[in-house]
Amino acid sequence: GEQAAEPVARAASELGARLHSRHTVVGIYERTLLVASARAATRVECDALVIATGAHDGTLLVPGADLPGVLGARASLTVLARDVWPRRPVVVVGSAPAARLLALRLGPRHIVKTIDESEVAEIEGSSAVGAVLLRSGERVETDVVAVATGLSPAFELGVQAGLDTARVAGGFA
Image 1 (cartoon, one colour):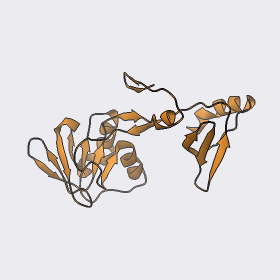
Image 2 (cartoon, one colour):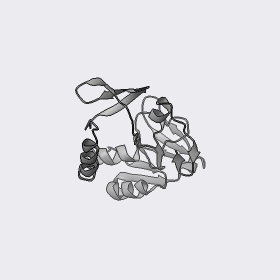
Image 3 (cartoon, helix red, strand yellow):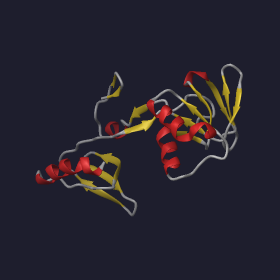
């Protein structure tokens, strides 16, 4: 969190770096960054750049995985932390550590099934999730699918900056 970042920010500042707290780099164009905050976007010129891109929740590669109601594990936990609960039980897909955390947070009353991603054939629905169809033929009705398949490195800004990227064990470098 912010406490862990304080010493790094202080050291960077002493070296002449300018810190843009609570901002997101949304584009890199040679030595110009497009930086956005909740209030505005601005261009920032830089001589040097260190990119810590973070990660995205993993996704399912099945039909319907882009329907409203399919959430990543981190988004699901954030929604629950804000005391927003689903009307019907949730299907948790995946075996990443976040799957166990989600199952604990949801509890037996709010979880209909926890399944491995290899078992999912399709997520059914037209304008939102209606059910999960398993490869076994079983159909599990739900409004929410929480995907806990692990994290994928967010390498897009690095590529946009012209950096070479390569797939390595556990992600991209």
